[in-house]
Image (cartoon, rainbow, N blue to C red):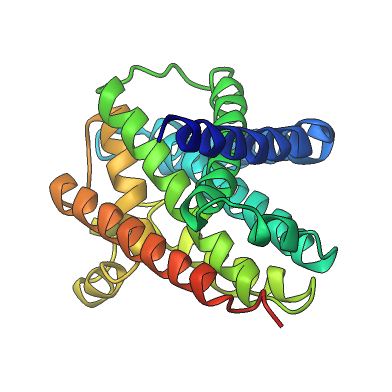
Length: 259
């Protein structure tokens, strides 16, 4: 039992180390661009446009959008790291080495997801650091902020893994981020409160899972939310549970992996 756990730990640590080194070696492409992009968001939307919008939910507009912009960078990078890495393993045909190793599927999944979370955390910290040049963060709840930060990163790392499993070309790994992830993120309350919308569109917005994550994170930073934070936590945990179970099912059956 002890030897088996030690073997599992070595396998997990090896995958995680590979994933971290993978994005750390090219930090100019993986960490720097999101920080620069978010700086432009802060300047254009927060400073220039925000001065004309005024307050939103009792906060300056730039303070209101900071939580959403931080989480948006976490979502994008957690997803991108796993989908590109796991698909590359398939494309280069060295995923077989993991499949024939005496390592359970949950260790493989945990390693890739942890790598995605690591990149999400690094980029999130970088973007948060950039935000301090434009606003003062007075965090409402450190515990809640950190929990939502990590859980959201885990959720989208799992989603990236599923995308990679089904992808048959490098074009396939960009379809979901472009046509699904980006619209959901931009319509997830990053730049506005859903209370500004007509009642019908408020109801439609509640079907967007990103809305719950953005508002839960905003509650952690600012102490305000358009929705029930308890409901937000239930939805996030529900998605994580479902995506984890589905990912393990795909690995167990070799979907998109075994020929």
